[in-house]
Length: 334
Image 1: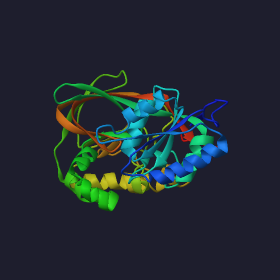
Image 2: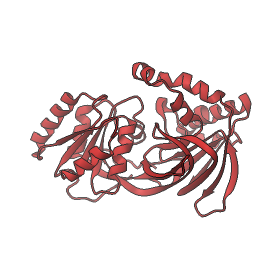
Image 3: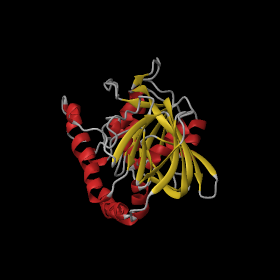
Image 4: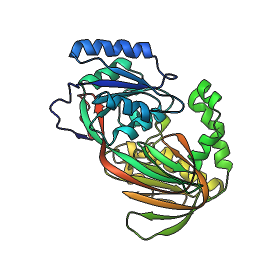
């Protein structure tokens, strides 16, 4: 991560909180905010709730219109994605207050979880860092184009079908375990993605795959390292393509992800023990990816369903998002 050389980064002029009222304890947040306002002499913080109709973009724009230069996002991965989408074209910084089952962006940035007071202190007294953000134009099954952003991953295939198969009520009760049965259903689905794709300015190619993941970050929940070379500040998208053929193919993927990525790459010199890409799972880096499918397929962004896509173009905006981190968090992410 690159630290921004803003002389006033540790003394925000105005802070706003965009929060998901279903997932946070608003009274606890307000108490922590009041304490830091008094300590730092900052002006009163504004609060903006998300809703089912507005997961965060509209609330963030309200916060910016009110003059906020730091926006605390209190909610899950979907709320973080929506706030980042609204913030990336502004001069304001995003401060994370993780809540929910995933908290993937905070995990990938190495930020603490479940610490309301710490998150608020970082928002008021932390430093600004520049990280990348993924921008994506999605063409739906009716050829309608929509533009969005993501901070962790976008995907077609396994992860999108898993989300489509997940029971929301069960997820609310048992968290990430609700994804298990949905994942089993998605894995059992042997239908293929048939697509044409182009990486950067290279020529177009045709391919068949079970799953395509495009990532700005590499780690999932349970410390699963899906994209081992991904870093949120390297200026590249990391693309994983899964092409399992039966049980052996899935075993190859599990070995690569859980053993090689999850264990070997995390020990000193362990990367020398990893194998080359196998057909079941291959990786590539690019700054832009364009995909055209032969039929509409489910697509997800940062763990939220975005309907069916017939095509999309995604690119990385290097350093396109400013994030507040604790003053002691100086280590680079890449």
